[in-house]
Amino acid sequence: MRTIWILNHHSGLEGDRHYELAKELVKQNLQVVVFLSAYSHRGERYLYEKPVTIRNVSPHIHYVWLRTAPTYHGNGSARILNMMDYSRLMRKYEARFYQRFGVPDVVIGSSVHPFAWESAYRIAKKKKIPFICEIRDFWPLSFIEIYGWSKFHPICLLFSLLERRAYKRADAIVTTMERGWQYLKQFSYVNTERVFWIPNGYHTKEIDQVLEKKEISLPEELECYLQKHWCAVYTGSFVDSECLPDMLDAAAYLQEHGMEEIHFAFIGDGCLRAELEARVEREGLKNVCIFSRIEKSQVAVALSKAKVCMAALKDDRVLNDLGLSLNKLNDYLYSGNPTVFACNSPNVVKDSGGGLVVPCNDPKAYAEALIAVYHMSEKERESMGEKGRKVIREQYNYATLAKQYHKILSLCAGWEEEA
Image (cartoon, rainbow, N blue to C red; front, side, top):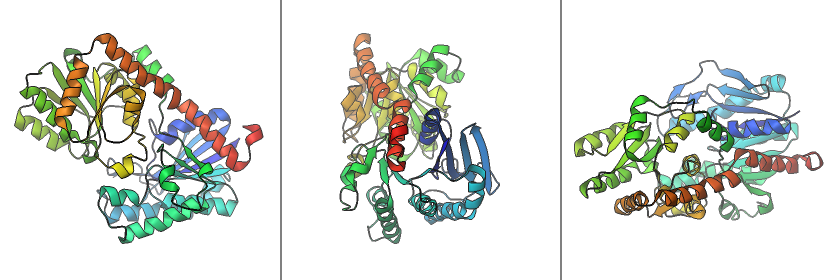
């Protein structure tokens, strides 16, 4: 059995890209080892206190948590130090990992941060194995476009150096962004024939089984709200990038214009939760209810009881035009309900016909799109929802994506005749 190492600082288990891919790759006679941080970026706490924690998640999937330091909040210097510590710990315990798992046949370094690329390449060079550079965020482009940093900022200069090194050294580049090659083609040494698109996927069969068995229930308050009202539902993080204030503006618009039939359910957690709750209370938005985060398996159940799904992004053309790969959209489109998405870039909602796309930062247009879905016949909503389900089933299914990834591994490692 061949072994793949994946270095992903912010990996996770259920619902995470690499865990879901691993479940399919083991079916192709591969063992997968994932190295990640024990410090939870979302929860801002340590999941494990030991320097190294190893769990055999399944007979052929192993997870290794590294206790990276220091702790941090937000995206300041402490987070950069935490990233760098990830590489330090990979080097420190490398011999122990070879002893436990053997030498890998291929190593994948996956951003968010480029230090994972550095560590993965060092292992690949030492052991003379292929190095795959996986890009889930373009750094330092994200710093420049999202946070407005100068390209001459010391961190941007460092990250720019690291990204160029990774692209030059990689045997293949995998990006979650469909048009990521448009950014990569500026680097003369990147062979675009070795650039591959593997988006974040979805386990369609698992979700089908969850809904068919009807064994997973929702919190009683949420269940009652969805049953009682015609609901537009948002699930996910309560953070700036998701434009939740714009959705509340749309809710306020509908309430002001007498569209009391449409209700809003916001399900999740994050740094904006208190602010959103305060605004709902202050403005008397009786058509809005905010619920705590639920488990991944419960999300599918909640969306199946919705009438329409909601998503929005800020107008960041430079990044978004490279292609979006949002887990949220996979959940939404496979729910069988239409999705209303505020986005100014090409996206799967528009391409699939699985919903309505409106301009960013236009609450009135967003509200009018929700009204349009409300006035659709049941058959029209089902038809739109089925278009979304079809594209997720055919193009974003993890079983299909894992087979595509295996072909890339085979190409790099010379396994073509056995793949």
